[in-house]
Image 1 (cartoon, helix red, strand yellow):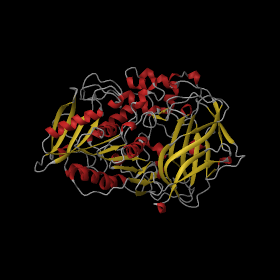
Image 2 (cartoon, one colour):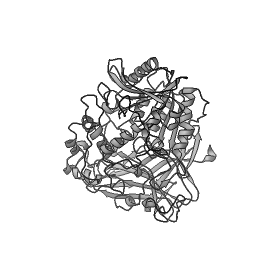
Image 3 (cartoon, helix red, strand yellow):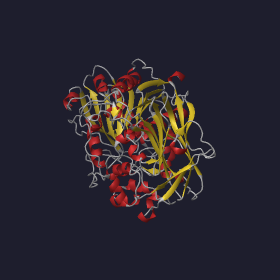
Image 4 (cartoon, one colour):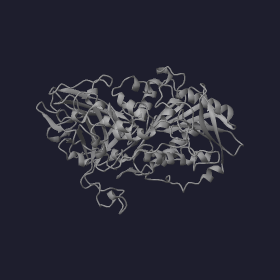
Length: 637
């Protein structure tokens, strides 16, 4: 359940991003905000904690009024504000969920260096000292903060934990590298790990345009001095993001709005995976991790699904002795704290998955490591299987029992687990940057979270979208682990984006078991989900990065080329009677920026540089385009 500070920051971000007001202004399962409930049981101090270079960080400390026992410290470091400011101003609740507040912890919230009321200079995803010449980084700030807290906060038991969602999760992931002996448990939830390869702003080199621009045009404004106030939000003047970004004519045209937003301009100045991005890649630093780690992510997180999976997997490999765990649920970004987790759009998940996670996993994890409570016996991975809506406790992720398989593209729009014949042929389509494929059917200025499960029928009916699907499945089919597209393609241009979407096609007579009369628009039709084409996973690679994100290379017009990469993991069951569908296309607007389809720095493209191109996807025995998957059965466990 979010605290008041999180709700206010969410509201501000919604305004800054042009998304409008949050859909749920009052936290789930909670009465209207009552700061007195916190004030009655906690005292508050606001302090400036000195770092080793003399910079002081603004920190709010909430300590239980009951001083008959000692308490562990539970800390969140954030660039989004530790609101409410003032020694007499209290939030409506504290911690990751009400259970923590009721149990009793010393809650610490800190504005990170250079943000809001803290001194110093802010650097987005500040590189670690290991890859920079800086005397400090976020791990040293974490160490220095904990050192001060343990020494100066009365009633602490010498143990500390850290948690955060999204950007605060980046600070949590970096914090676990601090090496402070008091830090025993951390939970990075939807952490940022690499802003070029797969988190937030890029996917394999393609710029996630509205999300990156809408966020940075507000968040990225400079802060001349410590402040309690956010900058004024950017106004698009319309709710139609497709039209607004298309009218700009080019990605670089956004610079007219960002003269005072240095990081956005740096994003455009670094179109390739150069040192600017590589030093912000956290994965190489995730070594010798001492605290226990509980990484949390959502299968339908449009922002940091990549980061959650990568933090867990990297720690497994590079810090094998760490007590390392993963939780993946059917959630959108932060949905495990901000929603019930029972549905996303019209897709239902059968239960309040968020409350289950908080009660059975998150709270016991911190209680064990910080208060000596019984070991909750967490397995390596606690993962939710979508499609059948079941939790699983697995010894590995991806499950080691998953059997590698490939769905092969076939002629006449077929999709099969067997290779195509020698005369399998090819399919071609014309990609026109002036009429890009939309990423969602609704009108939106930003990136609606519902796009991650949205119905894809609107896209499959376009002539510039290739569609391949199986026959109705004779039995359930569960896919687990990463998806691996392996495409053999050609283009009349010199660059092309390749979007691959895995889709669950519901039977025409499918009846939603959670259907109720009235309510939301998709619940007003007796059979709203009949024939629904649910997006399970969609990703892209910018073709010029097919061999290297660092060194782009053009396509030779008319010449066959291989494009292969790894997409984010899934854990989804296509039930008996459903079909497996794959859609392929080369634009996904405005979710990602348009590719001119000529070989160039796209961020410097002029409107006249955008050209039509004919793209071909081969599916014969010599060039068997496919989607690699892992097939899993609970019987294999």
